[in-house]
Figure 1 (spheres, one colour):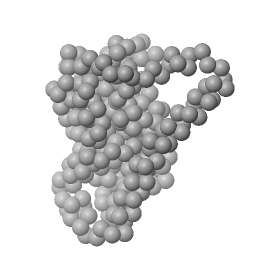
Figure 2: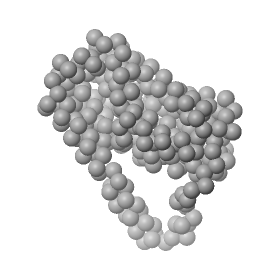
Figure 3: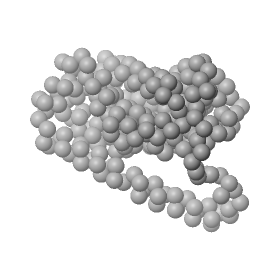
Figure 4: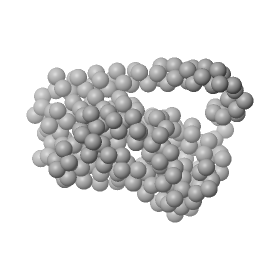
Length: 258
């Protein structure tokens, strides 16, 4: 499907595909490798890599429960814009030579199930679900634990001194704080809720969420195995700028949407 599109249209379709695939950043990278090995344009692969961990249809509902549907929809729209713009910019830079040859074993998601009957497909799906739950639940619990710590133990004044409206660099700090962490968007929502209840502006909260999901240190280490330093730095720079702009925009208009 993706080979039929190029340029902005290819980046758009790829970004939209990322919204319906509930992968964290580390899970998106093997798909990114598969896209690259299949010969898809570089911009298309990076649009997927940005949108898949950052924007998720299930997270849309969870975000709406905490922050309202207006904030949730705008978060998804801006996340898609970052993914489309990032992929389009990278495609214009002609940096195909910055992709490393990946020789380690990767799982073929299609050939092993191509001839399955319906029961085999259901068994396969059940087994994959168990694997996903096993890999993800710990990060959800960690996220809930950190959220509880913020909510019950860290003084509100201390949080607002760093991430409050009075600090003009709060959005940048929030995005950077999120980078060393690893969690999918479901693991970050409890932390985001705790920060928001402590009085942190909505844009700063969402910048933290985007930093965790799109630029976590473990996923960047994984990505460095298939992307050379120059392209990796450009990718991080584009996504960081997009996150910071999104954070400040939400801080400016968020109160009018809630």
